[in-house]
Image 1 (cartoon, one colour):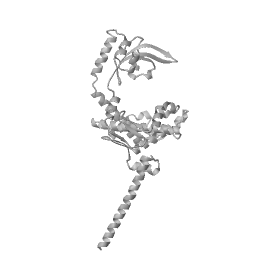
Image 2 (cartoon, one colour):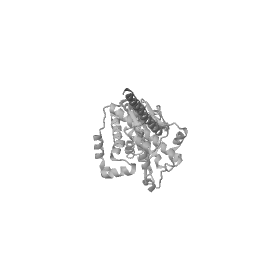
Image 3 (cartoon, rainbow, N blue to C red):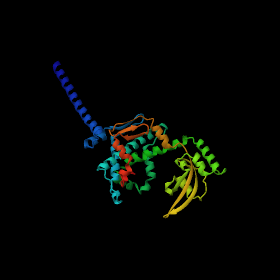
Image 4 (cartoon, one colour):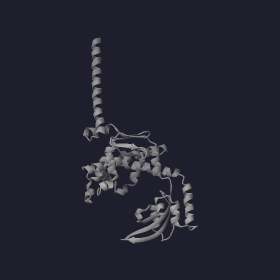
Length: 349
């Protein structure tokens, strides 16, 4: 009896060992398929939907799964390969050698956006900002008229991206709400009193004291245009920051504006000339600019504080730029010359 129990115990042990070995082998095949070979095999794709293999791990913030990356990549491909572009005389083909490289650039952009969204949500929650699904639903419902009706929106999402309405809410609306609320929190906490004092002093110099606008711009403006004495050249309305455009096209030549506030900082503009060319109105401006801490700069600084680990073989995290970059020098070079390598391809915009 004792020997029989011992044999049963051994059989059970052998069975457990065998099953464990099979499971280990399956996991090994899956891991190799996911990470080493980046396989699109149906079994691998199905496993990625069940098992949250991490594409990226962000310490203190969470992970971005392989399934998220591939799902967004498929949505981007569907959008750009849709018949809509062919009707406009443009065709996107990701199957060619050049197309595959452009596809990798899109994948890198997706990775960076998913990481940014993840960190924005983490930073927002640290400030007590929580966007519930109910809030997301309200946001969609309040803007549904933009799409005609709910059914139109659902049809277009399915046609263009292969998304459901819930996909749209989680992938687009919720991240945008977190970004919007975090931007508002940043703005409310940012002290711009020093910058306001500086721009008021510069405004006094070019108005009350009648100092030469170009000279003051060259000496004290903080924009790149300072190198050209504040000269912005000729611009159409849609080429200018909204706040500047709204004022510039209502001014007379020689006129100097009051201080204008924009998301970039504080501006004083002088209208040098205006004209119409082929039915399009243009203005020639100079500006004196004092920049303020921007949300984008603050966010990049915060992102640099996170320890990010990228598990995909073609990419690595650059902590200096807070961006995912290519490991492959050829892909880096291709990306640097993307405009030249991708003429006529709308997917690069």
